[in-house]
Image 1 (cartoon, rainbow, N blue to C red):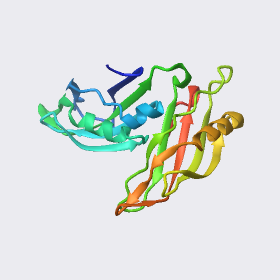
Image 2 (cartoon, rainbow, N blue to C red):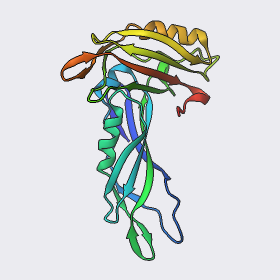
Image 3 (cartoon, rainbow, N blue to C red):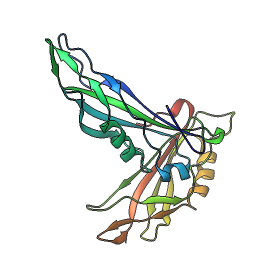
Image 4 (cartoon, rainbow, N blue to C red):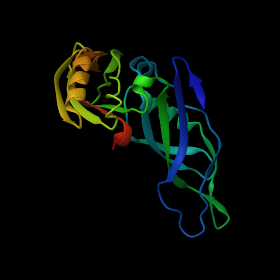
Length: 219
């Protein structure tokens, strides 16, 4: 596991064969891997998140067809993909021959900060064709709910306007209305480099999800 500044850790692990082996096919296993890099955007924002990536391990042990199955935003999806591409495997074997095998990898990014410990965050946008996603440049993820009530989640819809400011914020659902309302008050102060198309800023809609405790796994 690789340590980062400001109490940040990142790690990746092979978690599940995507297609169950048939007959006497042995599963691939990792022989060398690098650890993912925390994006500067996520570090500034104090993001805890886990990206789920699918891959195909080729007969020569290299990785192909890397695809993000569960994105989280904040530049961490790109970091996870770049990390996993460098992994090398002992390939799956069937009838004595190396064969392609599909697998999934969880790439986790964790903060060593009490107020954000155990969170899972995701920020996704609906982008027009050719648009780059907004980048958060000011603002941090809200802290956890009170310790007496740790198992909570919320979803907040929002729009990043062409100037990088937030509009149309609304709580879509939550297990704790007070916590969600306090979080929304903080989130409305966030500032972004806006999405662009052909060099021009455009408005895009997004959803921020935050879960803790028993709700920590976002689907």
